[in-house]
Image (tube, rainbow, N blue to C red; front, side, top):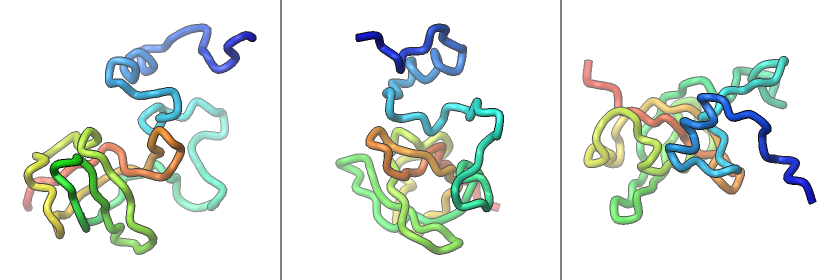
Length: 120
């Protein structure tokens, strides 16, 4: 059987993702290459835009936790490997964070590019 899901040419973005250890099902940091651009069935704001929320729980030993979006809705899963700015030791309940929405390896919604903004 031919491998239909394998790209014929690797872009720099693809190679960067491979170096980061991003799996086939984890495409949250890959740019959208469709002509329609990013967007969703919701018809509203693009789901990958930066959002603000706060840490609800963080399990340091396991390296994951949950964020509560400021605009309401369900809590969002995050993994410490998606922390791009700030220290993992600062991920305590109540810590304000900025993040983008993406998907984990199983296709479930998760936070990506999590950052702890510096105090103002």
